[in-house]
Image (cartoon, rainbow, N blue to C red; front, side, top):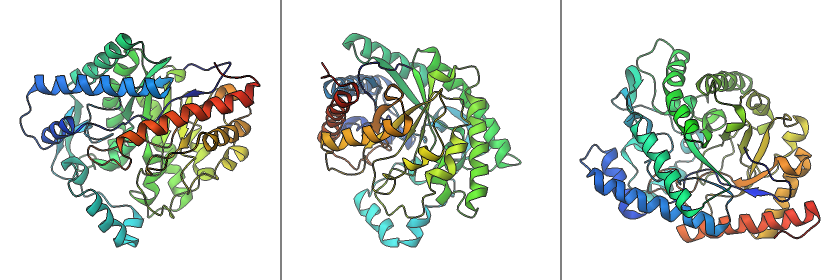
Length: 390
């Protein structure tokens, strides 16, 4: 994982807006409708090229393909595995039950959710990763386009954690949740290895380590939830076994939606569990109004010396464009708690296209936010290194 000795690098969490034609194709595929493979491939090529160029123009150093080929950040998994069928009865977040007005608002805002987001399948038999072609196609397409365009100092690709897969596509087959977790880690390791073998940084997306406190594990105490976090992290470690930790980064979030988030577990309580991950960097929300104060957790639990911090310094559910000075101050606060300017890479809180056709931020504003991220990083760099960034 690259670091810089003269300026703050920039990245983002992964998903970026998809165009209407590609979105329609992905939703049709999600619903099991026939989709012309050549048409889909052509649209993916166009979409990846578009988001790579847009990231370059915004000044992103460590970029990706924007998850253009996936209907959702974790609901794509059953398309690549056998053993899934039916519909999972996943619990909604606690605040959606406490505030039915919030659920009604979301239904008005996003009236046509993807099939898998509304009712993901469940594991009804032994799960098996049966088709590596989608992931190898993804990595090959991205590497080809990024190389043609001369894009990025470093490239990454996302993959869902075993934990979030287990709490989205629920278990209706294995003898225990832990047995299901282990099976997922074993099978997803094939995808993790494919990303690594393609020369890309692997980003594990694990909202289960924070968000699921108010969903799957809402009936546990905070201390009991931390134990589940530790178990989920151990499963990640199993899945990425054999990949050098400096080639893996871990993204943790509280759910990428505009809501009260008043039941979110404090970062301070889960941070020690996150440190047990065999990864080289942690990507954590720090810019939304509910978690902007939580750098204090890093003062109590210092970042391990082998880890980089990838703080969210731009929010992803609002069309406000952060002023570069605001971004710079957030970056400087992150550097102050880490104690090393070279171990901070500025990022966004979460993705801008978590699910197809469920974008909170309009596309033009996404690129303005990423541009402000770069401008803010330049301001912070000038202060931290004492010289103007070229």
